[in-house]
Amino acid sequence: MANRKGNRWALRLLGAALLLAVLGGGWGWWHHIHWQPDRAAFPIQGVEVGDRDGQVDFVAVKAIGADFVYLDASTSTLARDDTFASNFDAARGAKLHVGAVHRFDPCQPAEKQAGNFVTVVPRDASLLPPAVELAQLAHDCPVRVPDAAIQSELTTFLNQIETHTGKAAILKLSSDFEKRYHIAATIDRNLWLEGNRFQPDYGGRPWAMWTANSSFDNEATGGALRWVVVQP
Image (tube, rainbow, N blue to C red; front, side, top):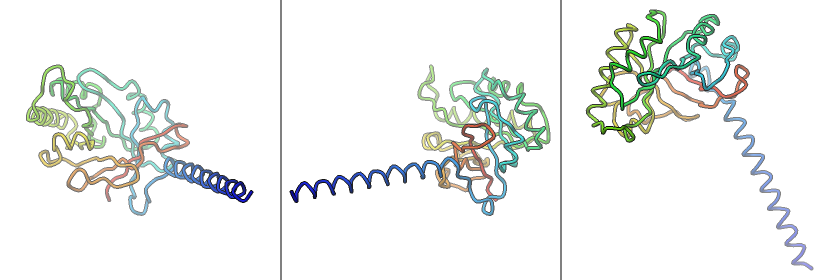
């Protein structure tokens, strides 16, 4: 009889512990998706937006604390974000500072990628510095691309889009790309790094921008936005 009572209490305690774990996990998840870095520490904050985010109310984006927006613009040699033009006009209308992002493809020639970018992104001195997303590795290229060629092509691409925009680009660098190609140490541009909640250090030097929450829940889209801060 005593053993049965002991077993019942053990099961109740186990059930209570599991319930607390579920509640704690749920609270942690809720806190994560609603988390923004302290504005006292990072006064300038904003978002990255593209067609994956659906329809975005940029007035609402500004109301929840964004000062700027980087818009996904182009990828590789031909792909373009279908929402770039409408997002560009809407973000400007909401009085947000606007920049453009190109997703660099290590398998494709720099000149053709630059041509794609400059066709999409207007020559406008008021735009923020262009950002180049470096995430795709060359492992799956149809023809092998040596590491030295990737750095050379990237340098060519940067020179061409910087001539178009009149501003030095920002390297939006993933940890995998940096680990493979060590770009931060070889190309002297400001870094935009990623790391949910925790400040990233994989660039090996101070970053200029940080994607602090890649799934920030908000009223502007009804979904998740990529929340970005600027190093003060």
